[in-house]
Image 1 (cartoon, rainbow, N blue to C red):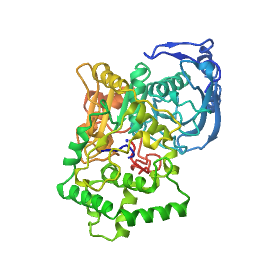
Image 2 (image 1 turned 90 degrees about the vertical axis):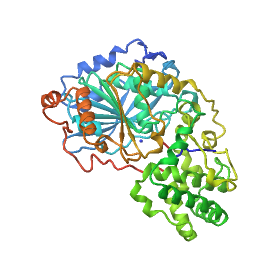
Image 3 (image 1 turned 135 degrees about the vertical axis):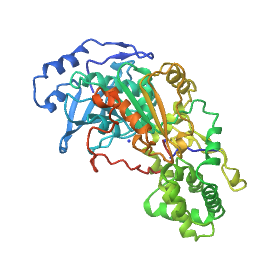
Image 4 (image 1 turned 180 degrees about the vertical axis):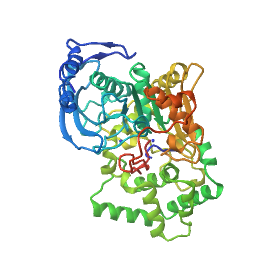
Length: 484
């Protein structure tokens, strides 16, 4: 059994204390942030208004036609329950269009992109975009790092506090969004602070409610794509293990040449088996059915097989250096998020480390980890029974969409869509006709900017902002290793 996870980017004063239910008790002086926003309202320069927020500091500005783009840092408490116990600087970016437009709160769940980019909801509503780096992804990491403060509630509290700081400036409707781990993040934020956002659009967000029950993933891999493609992938995966010795020797030589090491995962042989096991998952996460034509035959040369496994799985992802950036994700997978387990019956007799790979393997052993099974069950219950203005967009051929969020009878004005044939890059634009227009209209409605003709049904909904090839760069970016 293999844990297929590696596929799934501030104020020293006036800090609020937040309870687990999302209720907020204001620390003395918190109203100062609101007063600062009001006091600078007369300023015509958005930079001045932003920097008047207590705890906000300027890094750089990168102007973009029609916008102003800021890279900033905001001081956050390490522990929102005990704000006096220290702070850290969280990196954020702001794509500013106008204070009279809606604002989209975006997070990838990883590092923040410091170049101007516009998420799909931001283009649809023609609004501003606030993007936040997830806590503990460097440089947004407390020093020293108390890993017990990396959980979904603390991260949601980061978003809540940042939203409260900027809401006096950006007073129109707000939407939360993100893809993959970012879609999970947007959902968790809504669970703990349901009144902050006017809508949430979560893309390809997995929902591993019961960590030990992962049969949905086995069913997915038995039916995804065509039988011919599945058989070709399985044959290459098996052959890569048959030729293990020669392939591992090449892997070790590459690592020696590049100064890469394998202390965390255990050995180059373990790292190789891990990469081979990840291959089928990674193929469907990032590829489309048309790419099945590029799968080599099992009789291909060792050079060709090695290159294919590396291109799909990324041998660099299993090294110490490749794992380090994503330690916060693996920590969360092993403490709250869960990680899917996949069976490989076609590899019987070829695995040297069955059952070895999982979140604990990818995190340095000096970082303690303890799994909390109630965390995902709580979120799932809330989404089903109390969720409002939630939209989940999944990809039909995306492994991470095999265990999606589902809506119950208590959910209101909420929707689940699946983009036909889509991978981990599924979005509203890839939905089938009718659903695409309906989802777009819903997003416009939540943002408070739906044209009258769209509301009346006389005109199909479409994005309010024109497409910008650079700003709206949407192709799915292959990450080293399998992560949501």
